[in-house]
Length: 258
Image (tube, rainbow, N blue to C red; front, side, top):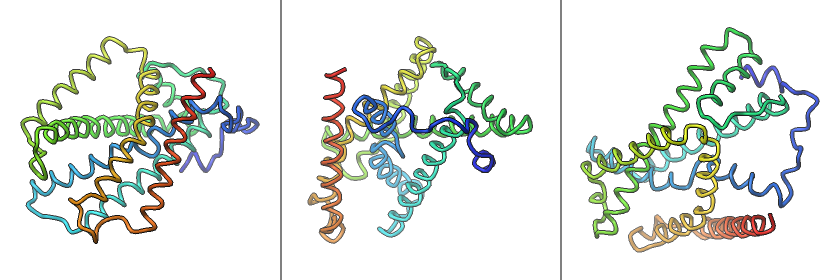
């Protein structure tokens, strides 16, 4: 809020230069949209977390409780995404700095920029906020990806319902993901920027497939007719699927012309 109150650092810089509304800017937009406000994988993660909470607490949440939990988390994620976008535009854009592809160096540059904008008193606050953000994201991914991978393989082996969650297999996949992440940090320490962009692009390119799978699940026989999408929701879902697929096609065209 303090940064938003002070206004943008570079007051005479066009925030929309170069223009994002061109085919050449599409790769950047695709990378940006890959995790904005969050990857579509979160739909599966949320379901698996609901299963895990039921197993731990013994309480089976009602549809209203589950929807409220998901909607609250998603709305907060949207709000955080908008705030991060605004902060990046007001604090980073127009400074003339070249940001390092190294994760540690980039984090230091980010803290320095915010401290310069707010004052020296803000350094520990910004450092703690940056660490908390990165730690919580790491913790979420280190649980979500192994959990969904474990559940996916168990689905392929014929397990259904709560049986897709197995603590032992989840633990094994968590170790494997942790080792893989540590290997990336050890062997490619200066390539975090490129790796993050690659992950965001892949996330966006797989979004139409995941969206189609979500739609099939919600309209499938395992969901009670009363809980399936209504006419309006189904129309919106199909339009969104078409738009996402069109973006993927345009992205392929932009790469072929580049």
